[in-house]
Length: 407
Image 1 (cartoon, rainbow, N blue to C red):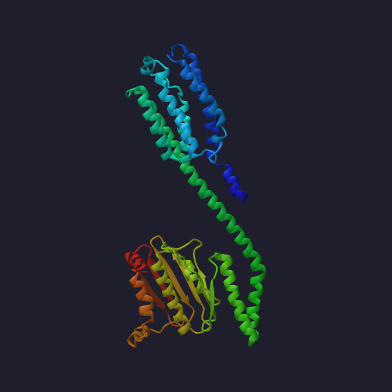
Image 2 (image 1 turned 60 degrees about the vertical axis):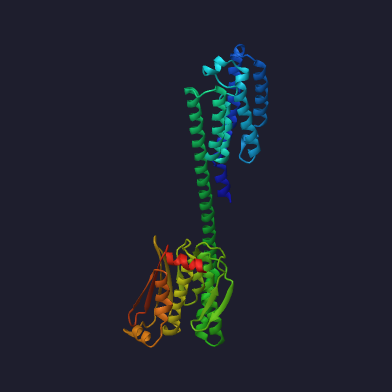
């Protein structure tokens, strides 16, 4: 929180608002000074005097309004721009036609630019374009016909205000990014601190209970197994920070806790990590990137189901004591998930024999799912050295989008 407050104090907008306040005061005095030096040339000086009285009071009274974004509201900006436009349109009534044609200044003079810049700082370049266009039209009406100096001044106000508005938008986006990065950094530091504390205490106790339970056997073995499951769940929580687990059920075949997480209801991409997190258990390790791995909903669910099918094969064929590892890799154009175990491996020709006998677990549950997604499933197994299944899914496929729409 301290870092975020420091970022807000360093905001590039605040110096702009302070500069705008000073600009409005100085340009108001400048406009009054120009009128005082040319008082005798005005045909109706009382109109100019009345306008400058309003401009003087308005400028000083509204200084708190332009001190920051919060008080510079849309109604204020509208009134401020109206005063500037009114001064421009009153110029032909107060000044001589000859002086106007020769390029004489309008009543508000360059004070008008302050009103346009307030739009730019408040709302960005689009607001600046709107305000500068209104000023340009008022100047053309006041002059009566486009003149070189009028066009020059209009273009200058346009370019300057739009450029400043764009810079403000970029600065705001940069500040938001920096604030978010500081929040993530603070959260990561806190997670690391908690992970150290938990590792030094709770995780070590759970690991010791698991080891002692296996040695003692009987009911102590069941207690040790449960301690191992909780150690895995706690380690996953402090290291990955994924969503809370909603439902828990025990899988006696692999000695694991099968966890089901609540999926988002929207139609946007799903984070594959959330769908794979339930598979982590005492003998199933999950290694995933520190950032979300987004995939279309259909592709994410099918890939997670293929991983589940691969783990089913581990439970069925590698033995109760076999360990499994899930590795998630987020490539530029695809997502690769590798499921590896330390079981006895698959004898050569066994898969073909299983398909001939009608057992299509690998062919349909794994390869079939990946084929429908436009991906691939590679199975590598060496007898005595375990089995590795590499699942690859492209990030953007027509098949994935089509399935998502059907669902």
